Image (cartoon, rainbow, N blue to C red; front, side, top):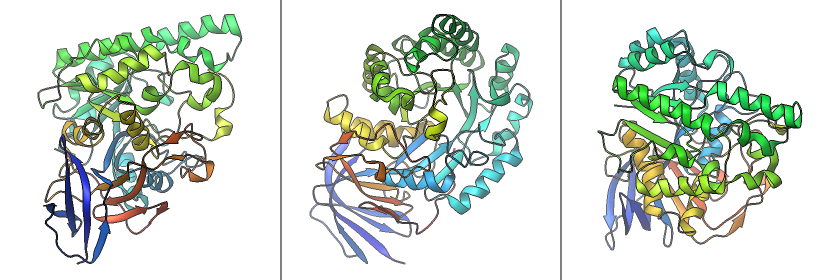
Length: 447
């Protein structure tokens, strides 16, 4: 049994920052040794001047596998995740076939067991027709919850009938999270018709936030919260984008009694509608990127208790699929490789502290979704760890991008932190620019 000692690192964990060494043995954190205490190991890594963080847990990715693997797959995107310090992810159900049956869910786990470099799990998808079987998920300890699309979506995954919505909330096990994409489809449709009359059949992407506007988001999020309160369900609203929506959430720290929670995604924390002029459809996503006022409100929500988790909504498409305007170009962008360095850039700008960022990207997802033995640097926990150089200025080049689609809206962006090492279950999966395909990740265990 080989051992690894990460020496003299700056640990950032559970709101504290301190110097220590960490011994990894048998895939777990065996010891945390405060300075100047040390020990010997088979491999010694000098982490002087580096941050040691828990591995990032991304609660929201689309790895496109199965069925859409021309643009991404579990192997390619989990390698990008490892390079970005992400050691666990939850994949969404709008694949082909959609993850709306137990057979499709089990097939995803079998695929990931062969291909995923980092840890994995999968949301089960709700539809207008499968609500009655959601109660059968109560014994599944390998999934984070149920994904509910309350806005325009692919195929039959849009749940738009009030009776079906009620059934989804009522039948989902009460200890399981319902993660909702909240946009009101009738509002979007009306807006689209109005904008088309003004600007043609495929208006420029600058009009995207006029179609998928504040009211479409607010109306749907309000409804989701109302139903969750009526049914006593655990609701996690995905990718908030508006200042108005934030007013629906309590400005209180997360606790186990907090049943209604919110996620913000990197794109909405980083970009504004002014960026459409330069990046165009590369930053087209659903819900849309909105104003600087909305972005600044989201940033404030990171520190006042209204936002509980930071995810990516990593959603690769080929650049050929991103051609067109706000109605024809595909929505979504690859983000998982650059989420941690992007958020560290916001810490540098004073938006939040590194300790607060670790809370939102590592600790909080583990607590909210009740993930077993991950998300913290604690003795006995799985050794999912990231070493970060906090003094390394670099600019993203096309050759750096590991997502299968081969592009990122972060290309050309400069950062001041760099991922040096990523460990997943004690295995080194990334080291100073090189992904190490030495193992596969593990299925996550919940509750």
